[in-house]
Amino acid sequence: MNYRKLLPFLLFTSISMVSQAYAEPNINGFVHFTVGGSDNVENIAPNGGGIIDTDNGYSAVASFRGIQESNEYGEMWFPIDPNSDMTKPEPNPVDLTGSNFAVITYKSNAPAILQLRQWGVHGGNHNMAKLPNTFNKVSKLKLNFSDFKDWGGNHTLDLSSVAKFNIAFLTEDKKTGTANIVVTGFTISNYNPTIK
Image 1 (cartoon, one colour):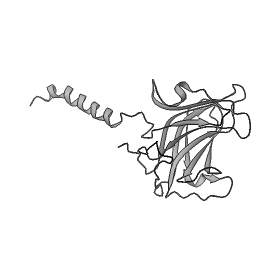
Image 2 (cartoon, helix red, strand yellow):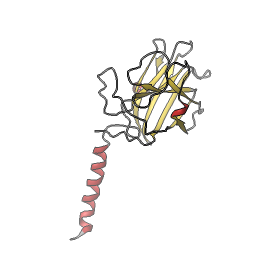
Image 3 (cartoon, rainbow, N blue to C red):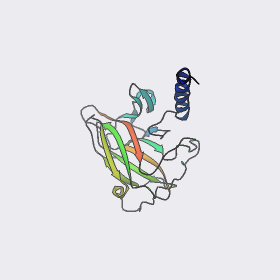
Image 4 (cartoon, rainbow, N blue to C red):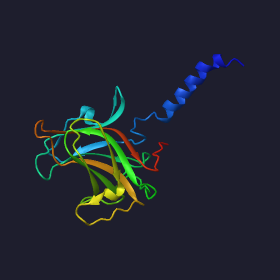
């Protein structure tokens, strides 16, 4: 058998299978990045934010203007289970007891927080960790789940039933009057968000 003649076909088939497996835009398998915020905060991200296609691959983008009062915020969240039905009020619960940390690759112009939301818990305080301002330089940050604290002191993090991550800005860059973040990578130890 002449394998040289088959090589273009095999190469095309391999590329086709990979593209079909990852046909939906995603960040390391995570999809459905959703942008929102309080009423007085303006969403100024291209195409409303979320996952966008760039020259360097997909990025999750959020950009806000007007986070000036203590009760104002801008946020971008995504379900841990990429197969969650986004028409329902809550993403699927996920058990992360076998995981110890998350790693985020991002750049921002203002400090933010990363919340790990319990399934079925809405409003009030949530377990969270700080995302430092990277001054628009790409940074990779490892966040141990033991570092996610409830600043209000009311909730103990239960990794056996979590639903989503939420990136929230509570302040903005004073020079530009904006708060921006670009996420190019997000992984969780011992967890593979397989898109079905």
